[in-house]
Image (cartoon, rainbow, N blue to C red; front, side, top):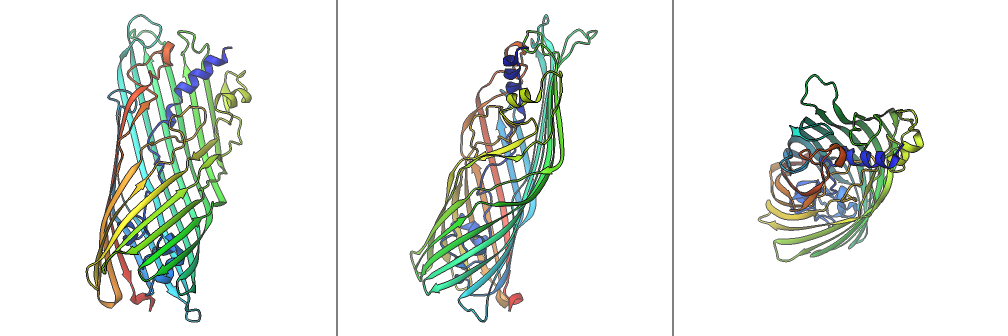
Length: 485
């Protein structure tokens, strides 16, 4: 039994984790109209209810008690990856959604005037991405005279959503120094489906000899975790500097169901695989745990003229070492019988067949914004920020089951404004546009060059993948001051 050849074939054919549906960006979302319009440059402190999230110490700047609603009225994301599965084999999707962004409020305590208390409910990383591909042709794919009929299909869907609910407290230690603390509980839900199939049929229709490679993954899980975020703000009439530390999350409870199958049929024409292989496993309502790494943010705000403030913020997310979100408790069903559990673990990167893990590299994002006060009742803001990808592995080795996906970095720009209405109400709106920075990567599968002897029917890898990703978002916010009086 030639395990080296088996290992090579399996690693080549584990296509299902090269897709680009998963979005590996920490700054996909900003919260609140003003903070969004300023490119997320809010850690230095704003007179805004989003301070419950960005820097609780800055809640001391909020002068009026109110309840604020922010809604992503329209959100469109477009994705296209040229040559994703080989030359001219493109993947593309368009996603439209209407989701709440943030509900937040800040109030003061009558007996402790130096203290502010805030609360919030927000959603983030909401996306539903679908990618499909079908390719047919005639190629000399297996060891038979002439060309054979070739059919390959690829289908993927990922749904991700996160909700956070929390509260914050701040205290003015001195007229110019405040401390704050935010505590959040977070719910995360992920549903993932991936199916990959290659079929080679001989030209002779009387023959029953066909060659197949198939892979199927389907899992969904939910997880509840929590974290603390201490912060500090040094503030003067024309200058402010803030700092916040988001501590690593701690898991509370999580459950998931996982299904995975991999099989080959008659892939032995040139001796690459001397026997058919089938591996399958399922785990139902098993324990999962999802972690978020620590991050540290610093912000500076300065008044540069009578009506203009400039804001700058940066947040560094620490590296997340590889860990298992799902630690497979099962023993995979397999054929032939002599492929035991230890061999399967060796083939799949030192972990069980159904285990699923993640990792993240350290990144730093920067936001810059300008705030202009037009009058006592009106103002506008504009800004932009980076959104670097935290995907730790630029080239996937196909050894472990994890969702390796997008590799592009983003730039995001926004323009917004606000108008004070009667009765203490305020209406605000912002438009945000983001795009992927140009980058060319390699495709690891080419549906146009299948050959059983050379590449196990998955084609020859090569350069030429170009990704285009665009996002458009309109947010509307209504602040109801009267409700809190």
